[in-house]
Image 1 (tube, helix red, strand yellow):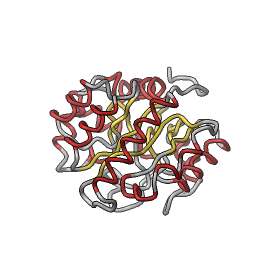
Image 2 (cartoon, helix red, strand yellow):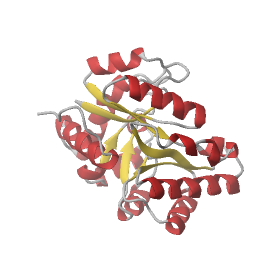
Image 3 (cartoon, helix red, strand yellow):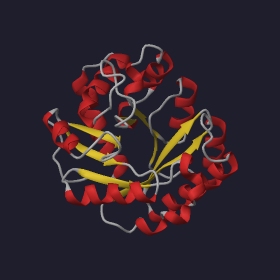
Length: 253
């Protein structure tokens, strides 16, 4: 059994049927991630209606101009296990960088205040991401989602106590840096995710991603580490349970 530590259901090309398809593929737990108030509320609704699903509440850096006040009322909902995804994205700059930094800092503070995990999105913004974390204090349970750095960024994140979550990018031909980070990452700090409906792994590139593809990600992580995929399956299950505080479904045997 696998945990998809980061997906968006429903979202654009992905509907609730994806959960049933994932269960058929052995993916039985899902962290359904919010990116703004509307998507966070939808993630909560799905989590409350489906076993094995938990929600996060967050404001994506693309949407930082909406203001963190737009999401603060959602953290008291049942089955919310994390703040995020939040962070910095300097590739697209859909929100001004100072606004992104302020929104990220505010959400780090919310993770501390509510005792929740923090889910970080960082793209082309490593130094500023680490600077905000240094200023605000790293929450005890922090996930660097869809990890796209190399070994240097991995060491910095791990030294802060963070978990690294690997997506379908690890299957891409040009992702040697990401594979190097996966090889470095200890099993008890390693998560696997789809980020569905984005970033479908090989051989599904160019099509909408879905949580059922988590085993493909796990197999690529295992190959990078020279392990049997079953080892990654069990370890990532336990790591997700620890970092998000999950209960309900028995662990694989």
